[in-house]
Image (cartoon, rainbow, N blue to C red; front, side, top):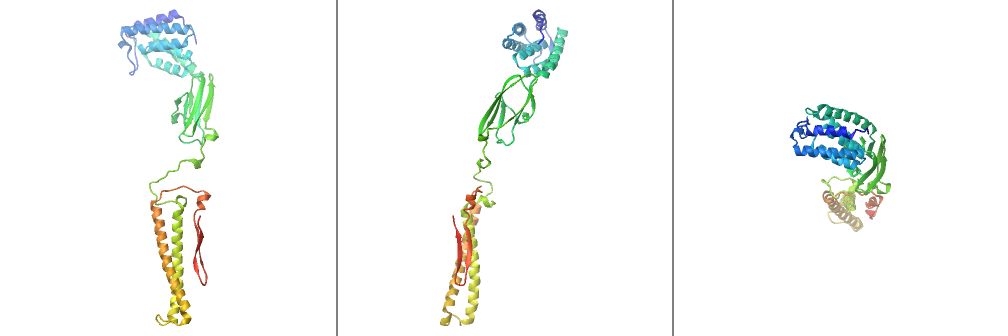
Length: 343
Protein backbone atom coordinates (compact mmCIF):
# COMPACT_ATOMS: atom_id res chain seq x y z
CA UNK A 1 0.00 0.00 0.00
CA UNK A 2 1.61 3.30 -1.06
CA UNK A 3 2.57 5.72 1.71
CA UNK A 4 1.28 9.30 1.95
CA UNK A 5 3.03 11.85 4.13
CA UNK A 6 0.97 12.47 7.23
CA UNK A 7 1.45 16.23 7.00
CA UNK A 8 -0.02 16.47 3.48
CA UNK A 9 -2.90 14.13 4.39
CA UNK A 10 -3.61 16.16 7.50
CA UNK A 11 -3.81 19.33 5.42
CA UNK A 12 -6.23 17.69 2.98
CA UNK A 13 -8.42 16.43 5.80
CA UNK A 14 -8.35 19.81 7.48
CA UNK A 15 -9.40 21.61 4.30
CA UNK A 16 -12.27 19.23 3.59
CA UNK A 17 -13.46 19.04 7.18
CA UNK A 18 -13.58 22.82 7.59
CA UNK A 19 -15.22 23.49 4.22
CA UNK A 20 -18.80 24.67 4.83
CA UNK A 21 -20.18 22.68 1.89
CA UNK A 22 -17.88 20.10 0.37
CA UNK A 23 -20.01 17.81 -1.82
CA UNK A 24 -23.44 16.58 -2.72
CA UNK A 25 -23.66 12.95 -1.75
CA UNK A 26 -25.95 10.25 -3.12
CA UNK A 27 -29.62 10.63 -2.14
CA UNK A 28 -29.41 7.94 0.55
CA UNK A 29 -26.53 9.65 2.37
CA UNK A 30 -26.54 12.86 4.44
CA UNK A 31 -25.37 15.99 2.57
CA UNK A 32 -22.06 17.32 3.93
CA UNK A 33 -23.58 20.78 4.12
CA UNK A 34 -26.01 19.51 6.76
CA UNK A 35 -23.22 18.33 9.08
CA UNK A 36 -22.91 20.47 12.20
CA UNK A 37 -19.68 22.20 13.10
CA UNK A 38 -19.28 19.92 16.13
CA UNK A 39 -19.59 16.76 14.03
CA UNK A 40 -17.31 18.21 11.36
CA UNK A 41 -14.65 18.95 14.00
CA UNK A 42 -15.08 15.47 15.49
CA UNK A 43 -14.70 13.86 12.06
CA UNK A 44 -11.51 15.88 11.44
CA UNK A 45 -9.95 14.74 14.73
CA UNK A 46 -10.96 11.11 14.17
CA UNK A 47 -9.47 11.31 10.66
CA UNK A 48 -6.16 12.53 12.00
CA UNK A 49 -6.10 9.80 14.67
CA UNK A 50 -7.04 7.09 12.16
CA UNK A 51 -4.36 8.03 9.64
CA UNK A 52 -1.78 8.24 12.42
CA UNK A 53 -2.74 4.72 13.60
CA UNK A 54 -2.50 3.43 10.03
CA UNK A 55 0.97 4.96 9.64
CA UNK A 56 2.21 3.13 12.72
CA UNK A 57 0.68 -0.19 11.61
CA UNK A 58 -2.33 -0.41 13.95
CA UNK A 59 -4.95 -1.43 11.39
CA UNK A 60 -7.68 -2.18 13.92
CA UNK A 61 -7.54 1.27 15.57
CA UNK A 62 -7.11 3.00 12.23
CA UNK A 63 -10.19 1.32 10.79
CA UNK A 64 -12.26 2.12 13.88
CA UNK A 65 -11.34 5.84 13.85
CA UNK A 66 -11.75 6.29 10.10
CA UNK A 67 -15.08 4.43 10.02
CA UNK A 68 -16.39 6.78 12.68
CA UNK A 69 -15.06 9.81 10.82
CA UNK A 70 -16.60 8.73 7.52
CA UNK A 71 -19.93 8.04 9.24
CA UNK A 72 -19.96 11.65 10.49
CA UNK A 73 -18.75 13.30 7.29
CA UNK A 74 -19.26 11.66 3.90
CA UNK A 75 -16.34 13.07 1.90
CA UNK A 76 -14.07 11.26 -0.60
CA UNK A 77 -10.87 11.80 1.38
CA UNK A 78 -12.23 10.17 4.53
CA UNK A 79 -13.83 7.40 2.47
CA UNK A 80 -10.57 6.76 0.64
CA UNK A 81 -8.55 6.44 3.84
CA UNK A 82 -11.21 4.31 5.54
CA UNK A 83 -10.94 1.93 2.55
CA UNK A 84 -7.17 1.75 2.94
CA UNK A 85 -7.62 0.92 6.62
CA UNK A 86 -10.00 -1.91 5.68
CA UNK A 87 -7.37 -3.30 3.29
CA UNK A 88 -4.78 -3.24 6.07
CA UNK A 89 -7.26 -5.01 8.36
CA UNK A 90 -7.77 -7.82 5.82
CA UNK A 91 -11.30 -6.76 4.85
CA UNK A 92 -10.58 -6.62 1.13
CA UNK A 93 -14.14 -7.18 -0.09
CA UNK A 94 -15.45 -4.39 2.15
CA UNK A 95 -12.58 -2.13 1.05
CA UNK A 96 -13.41 -2.68 -2.64
CA UNK A 97 -17.01 -1.67 -1.98
CA UNK A 98 -15.85 1.44 -0.07
CA UNK A 99 -13.62 2.45 -2.99
CA UNK A 100 -16.66 2.15 -5.28
CA UNK A 101 -18.69 4.34 -2.93
CA UNK A 102 -15.98 7.01 -2.90
CA UNK A 103 -16.02 7.10 -6.71
CA UNK A 104 -19.79 7.73 -6.69
CA UNK A 105 -19.62 10.77 -4.41
CA UNK A 106 -19.91 14.14 -6.21
CA UNK A 107 -17.56 16.89 -5.06
CA UNK A 108 -19.08 20.32 -5.67
CA UNK A 109 -17.48 22.90 -3.34
CA UNK A 110 -14.45 23.42 -1.15
CA UNK A 111 -11.24 21.61 -2.11
CA UNK A 112 -12.81 19.99 -5.17
CA UNK A 113 -9.47 19.11 -6.73
CA UNK A 114 -8.32 17.34 -3.55
CA UNK A 115 -11.56 15.39 -3.43
CA UNK A 116 -11.26 14.39 -7.08
CA UNK A 117 -7.70 13.24 -6.53
CA UNK A 118 -8.91 11.04 -3.65
CA UNK A 119 -11.54 9.59 -5.99
CA UNK A 120 -8.99 8.90 -8.74
CA UNK A 121 -6.69 7.20 -6.23
CA UNK A 122 -9.64 5.16 -4.90
CA UNK A 123 -10.56 3.96 -8.40
CA UNK A 124 -6.99 2.98 -9.20
CA UNK A 125 -6.49 1.11 -5.94
CA UNK A 126 -9.88 -0.62 -6.32
CA UNK A 127 -8.89 -2.08 -9.69
CA UNK A 128 -5.61 -3.32 -8.27
CA UNK A 129 -7.33 -4.76 -5.19
CA UNK A 130 -10.04 -6.60 -7.09
CA UNK A 131 -7.41 -8.33 -9.22
CA UNK A 132 -5.88 -9.72 -6.01
CA UNK A 133 -9.10 -10.83 -4.32
CA UNK A 134 -9.38 -14.58 -3.60
CA UNK A 135 -12.52 -16.16 -5.06
CA UNK A 136 -14.48 -19.12 -3.73
CA UNK A 137 -17.31 -21.17 -5.25
CA UNK A 138 -19.41 -23.12 -2.72
CA UNK A 139 -22.01 -25.73 -3.69
CA UNK A 140 -23.93 -28.58 -2.05
CA UNK A 141 -23.10 -31.99 -3.51
CA UNK A 142 -25.77 -34.00 -5.30
CA UNK A 143 -27.60 -36.57 -3.21
CA UNK A 144 -27.63 -34.50 -0.01
CA UNK A 145 -30.89 -34.09 1.96
CA UNK A 146 -33.14 -31.33 0.63
CA UNK A 147 -33.08 -29.45 3.96
CA UNK A 148 -29.30 -28.84 3.88
CA UNK A 149 -28.01 -25.25 3.97
CA UNK A 150 -24.47 -23.94 3.48
CA UNK A 151 -22.72 -21.21 5.47
CA UNK A 152 -19.40 -19.37 5.19
CA UNK A 153 -18.02 -18.16 8.52
CA UNK A 154 -21.49 -18.62 10.08
CA UNK A 155 -23.12 -16.49 7.36
CA UNK A 156 -25.82 -18.53 5.55
CA UNK A 157 -25.52 -18.65 1.78
CA UNK A 158 -28.82 -18.04 -0.04
CA UNK A 159 -29.65 -20.61 -2.73
CA UNK A 160 -28.90 -18.05 -5.46
CA UNK A 161 -25.30 -17.77 -4.21
CA UNK A 162 -24.59 -21.52 -4.40
CA UNK A 163 -22.35 -22.55 -7.28
CA UNK A 164 -21.31 -18.93 -7.90
CA UNK A 165 -17.73 -17.63 -7.91
CA UNK A 166 -17.65 -15.10 -5.03
CA UNK A 167 -14.93 -12.64 -3.96
CA UNK A 168 -13.63 -13.40 -0.48
CA UNK A 169 -11.30 -11.90 2.08
CA UNK A 170 -7.94 -13.64 2.40
CA UNK A 171 -7.30 -15.79 5.45
CA UNK A 172 -8.98 -18.66 7.24
CA UNK A 173 -12.45 -19.68 6.09
CA UNK A 174 -14.92 -21.98 7.81
CA UNK A 175 -17.43 -23.78 5.58
CA UNK A 176 -20.47 -25.36 7.22
CA UNK A 177 -23.17 -27.71 5.96
CA UNK A 178 -26.20 -27.93 8.25
CA UNK A 179 -28.86 -30.63 7.76
CA UNK A 180 -31.46 -32.30 9.95
CA UNK A 181 -29.43 -35.53 9.67
CA UNK A 182 -26.28 -33.82 10.98
CA UNK A 183 -23.71 -31.09 10.36
CA UNK A 184 -20.33 -31.02 8.68
CA UNK A 185 -17.60 -28.39 8.77
CA UNK A 186 -14.45 -27.71 6.76
CA UNK A 187 -11.57 -25.33 7.43
CA UNK A 188 -9.48 -23.79 4.67
CA UNK A 189 -7.27 -20.78 4.07
CA UNK A 190 -7.49 -18.47 1.08
CA UNK A 191 -4.47 -16.60 -0.23
CA UNK A 192 -4.15 -13.60 -2.51
CA UNK A 193 -5.51 -14.26 -6.01
CA UNK A 194 -6.48 -17.88 -5.22
CA UNK A 195 -9.52 -19.44 -6.92
CA UNK A 196 -11.13 -22.40 -5.20
CA UNK A 197 -14.27 -24.51 -5.61
CA UNK A 198 -15.71 -26.59 -2.75
CA UNK A 199 -18.64 -29.02 -2.82
CA UNK A 200 -20.09 -29.72 0.62
CA UNK A 201 -21.54 -33.06 1.65
CA UNK A 202 -22.29 -35.00 4.82
CA UNK A 203 -20.17 -37.93 5.84
CA UNK A 204 -21.55 -41.17 4.41
CA UNK A 205 -22.73 -42.37 7.83
CA UNK A 206 -24.92 -39.26 8.22
CA UNK A 207 -26.77 -39.47 4.90
CA UNK A 208 -30.12 -41.22 5.50
CA UNK A 209 -31.13 -44.09 3.26
CA UNK A 210 -34.14 -43.40 1.03
CA UNK A 211 -36.24 -45.94 3.01
CA UNK A 212 -35.49 -44.02 6.22
CA UNK A 213 -37.38 -40.98 5.00
CA UNK A 214 -40.46 -40.04 6.94
CA UNK A 215 -43.66 -41.53 5.53
CA UNK A 216 -46.89 -39.54 5.90
CA UNK A 217 -49.53 -41.29 7.95
CA UNK A 218 -52.41 -39.78 6.04
CA UNK A 219 -53.24 -38.44 2.63
CA UNK A 220 -56.00 -36.21 1.28
CA UNK A 221 -57.64 -39.11 -0.57
CA UNK A 222 -57.38 -42.62 0.85
CA UNK A 223 -59.85 -44.16 -1.56
CA UNK A 224 -57.39 -44.72 -4.40
CA UNK A 225 -54.33 -46.65 -3.31
CA UNK A 226 -51.84 -49.02 -4.84
CA UNK A 227 -51.48 -52.59 -3.67
CA UNK A 228 -48.56 -51.70 -1.43
CA UNK A 229 -50.73 -49.08 0.32
CA UNK A 230 -53.25 -51.46 2.01
CA UNK A 231 -53.16 -53.49 5.17
CA UNK A 232 -53.32 -57.31 5.06
CA UNK A 233 -56.93 -57.15 6.33
CA UNK A 234 -58.01 -55.47 3.10
CA UNK A 235 -56.54 -58.28 1.05
CA UNK A 236 -58.02 -60.93 3.39
CA UNK A 237 -61.49 -59.41 2.99
CA UNK A 238 -61.10 -59.05 -0.75
CA UNK A 239 -59.81 -62.61 -1.16
CA UNK A 240 -62.50 -64.13 1.06
CA UNK A 241 -65.17 -62.12 -0.75
CA UNK A 242 -63.91 -63.20 -4.14
CA UNK A 243 -63.59 -66.83 -3.06
CA UNK A 244 -67.10 -66.71 -1.57
CA UNK A 245 -68.62 -65.44 -4.79
CA UNK A 246 -66.71 -68.01 -6.81
CA UNK A 247 -67.83 -70.79 -4.46
CA UNK A 248 -71.44 -69.59 -4.65
CA UNK A 249 -71.29 -69.52 -8.44
CA UNK A 250 -69.78 -73.02 -8.75
CA UNK A 251 -72.13 -74.52 -6.16
CA UNK A 252 -75.06 -72.77 -7.76
CA UNK A 253 -74.16 -74.23 -11.14
CA UNK A 254 -73.88 -77.71 -9.63
CA UNK A 255 -77.18 -77.39 -7.74
CA UNK A 256 -78.91 -76.18 -10.90
CA UNK A 257 -77.73 -79.26 -12.76
CA UNK A 258 -78.79 -81.54 -9.90
CA UNK A 259 -82.17 -79.83 -9.69
CA UNK A 260 -82.81 -80.44 -13.39
CA UNK A 261 -81.92 -84.12 -13.04
CA UNK A 262 -84.10 -84.54 -9.94
CA UNK A 263 -87.08 -82.95 -11.68
CA UNK A 264 -86.86 -85.73 -14.24
CA UNK A 265 -86.29 -88.54 -11.72
CA UNK A 266 -88.74 -87.39 -9.04
CA UNK A 267 -92.36 -86.42 -9.03
CA UNK A 268 -92.78 -83.16 -7.20
CA UNK A 269 -91.13 -83.54 -3.80
CA UNK A 270 -91.47 -87.29 -3.78
CA UNK A 271 -88.40 -89.30 -4.83
CA UNK A 272 -87.68 -92.94 -4.93
CA UNK A 273 -85.24 -94.22 -2.30
CA UNK A 274 -82.49 -94.67 -4.90
CA UNK A 275 -82.50 -90.87 -5.44
CA UNK A 276 -82.29 -89.88 -1.77
CA UNK A 277 -78.50 -89.51 -1.88
CA UNK A 278 -78.72 -87.28 -4.96
CA UNK A 279 -81.42 -85.22 -3.27
CA UNK A 280 -79.17 -84.73 -0.22
CA UNK A 281 -76.31 -83.57 -2.45
CA UNK A 282 -78.64 -81.10 -4.19
CA UNK A 283 -79.77 -79.61 -0.89
CA UNK A 284 -76.17 -79.43 0.30
CA UNK A 285 -74.88 -77.67 -2.84
CA UNK A 286 -77.82 -75.27 -2.75
CA UNK A 287 -76.97 -74.36 0.87
CA UNK A 288 -73.27 -73.98 0.01
CA UNK A 289 -74.18 -71.71 -2.92
CA UNK A 290 -76.31 -69.51 -0.70
CA UNK A 291 -73.61 -69.33 1.99
CA UNK A 292 -70.92 -68.66 -0.63
CA UNK A 293 -72.78 -65.70 -2.07
CA UNK A 294 -73.43 -64.40 1.44
CA UNK A 295 -69.77 -64.67 2.48
CA UNK A 296 -68.72 -63.10 -0.82
CA UNK A 297 -70.93 -60.08 -0.35
CA UNK A 298 -69.78 -59.60 3.26
CA UNK A 299 -66.11 -59.94 2.25
CA UNK A 300 -66.35 -57.50 -0.63
CA UNK A 301 -68.33 -55.08 1.51
CA UNK A 302 -65.66 -55.20 4.22
CA UNK A 303 -62.90 -54.67 1.63
CA UNK A 304 -64.74 -51.67 0.25
CA UNK A 305 -65.13 -50.18 3.73
CA UNK A 306 -61.40 -50.64 4.42
CA UNK A 307 -60.48 -49.14 1.05
CA UNK A 308 -62.51 -46.06 1.91
CA UNK A 309 -61.42 -45.56 5.53
CA UNK A 310 -57.96 -46.97 6.15
CA UNK A 311 -54.96 -44.57 5.91
CA UNK A 312 -52.40 -45.23 3.15
CA UNK A 313 -49.33 -47.24 4.05
CA UNK A 314 -46.10 -47.75 2.20
CA UNK A 315 -44.77 -51.17 2.96
CA UNK A 316 -43.34 -52.93 -0.08
CA UNK A 317 -40.96 -55.26 1.71
CA UNK A 318 -41.00 -58.99 1.09
CA UNK A 319 -42.42 -59.49 4.56
CA UNK A 320 -45.48 -57.32 3.88
CA UNK A 321 -46.07 -58.98 0.52
CA UNK A 322 -45.98 -62.35 2.24
CA UNK A 323 -48.86 -61.21 4.46
CA UNK A 324 -51.31 -61.28 1.53
CA UNK A 325 -53.36 -64.51 1.86
CA UNK A 326 -53.02 -67.14 -0.83
CA UNK A 327 -56.39 -68.77 -1.60
CA UNK A 328 -57.53 -71.36 -4.13
CA UNK A 329 -60.77 -73.21 -4.90
CA UNK A 330 -60.86 -77.00 -5.12
CA UNK A 331 -63.65 -79.23 -6.42
CA UNK A 332 -64.11 -82.95 -7.05
CA UNK A 333 -66.97 -85.37 -7.57
CA UNK A 334 -67.94 -85.49 -3.90
CA UNK A 335 -66.85 -82.15 -2.40
CA UNK A 336 -65.62 -78.61 -3.05
CA UNK A 337 -64.27 -75.73 -0.98
CA UNK A 338 -61.58 -73.06 -0.48
CA UNK A 339 -58.09 -73.68 0.78
CA UNK A 340 -55.23 -71.24 1.36
CA UNK A 341 -52.41 -69.91 3.49
CA UNK A 342 -52.94 -67.09 5.97
CA UNK A 343 -49.89 -65.46 7.57
